[in-house]
Image 1 (cartoon, rainbow, N blue to C red):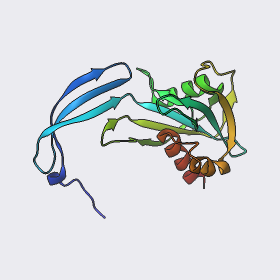
Image 2 (cartoon, rainbow, N blue to C red):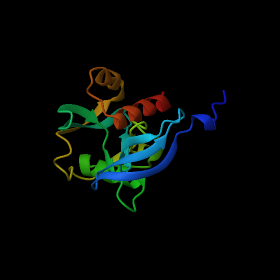
Image 3 (tube, one colour):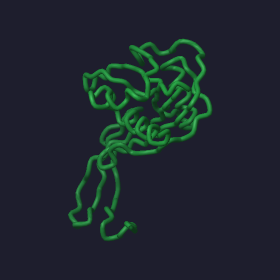
Image 4 (tube, rainbow, N blue to C red):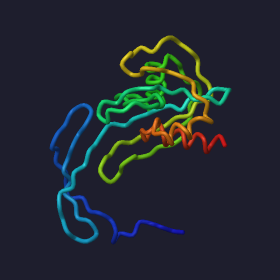
Length: 183
């Protein structure tokens, strides 16, 4: 099936203005004309690129962090990750964040998936890397990142997802892609 990019269905952008800006979040209004021809301003939330790591050991366990997210007032398991710093690659950020959050340094990463979790409203590129080996290099350096760091059997991941204990898109997409790739 050839879906192509039919020009008649393309939204046209005429400009963009910043409504709010910080080091973490930029909210803009984009002057657009959708395919129906009714021009208007559409909100867009622009975030920095995020990189995370799915680290799986030889026993088919995945390295996860249990943490509280105040915005949703919820606890859950996540894969380690965070914002890619200026001058840093996604892979470098995934390693740095994993070490900071867990004390484990993933080895031989390869990009598993690159995705946008909410492209209709939010521009937040995500990159997920897979590692099949990690070395313990110390204790987590940022105590605010995780309440618990643990190796969880991959076989338990579907139940954690079903119970809502893994809810963030980065962890969900990364774990599901890793499970698909590993069989």
